[in-house]
Image: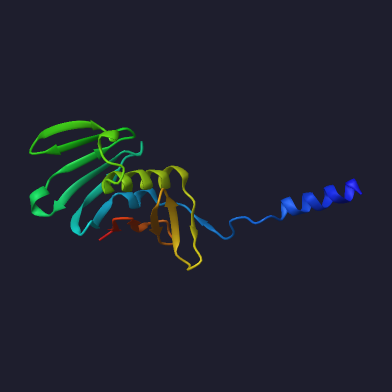
Length: 155
């Protein structure tokens, strides 16, 4: 009886529910792209690049008041540059819902962890800490949604 119970238990463990379907890997080159964002009702545009160490630089081009403003994100610091003046801050100096830091963290997680998968609607996505990043079948990022806005990539 014990052998039968062990065999049934083993079969259940081997056949348990898993995340089915194909996984899609991130195309790292797609992380260097133009973007359009709408955050808390304000629109932003710019260009972002990622280096091999998963650091991100965002150069803002719109609105005009922040044109040429740059954020440089590393794991634990944020450096801002405007009019040839640099300031470096701890990432903790920014609020948790600072959208540009949130998108950096989500995209870095995508790059490090990989593994986009199809959701029930057939969209290829990766979700991390409430942010959903969507990609095409080649692993190119196309958009991201946050609780207070969205990003569109590759314009």
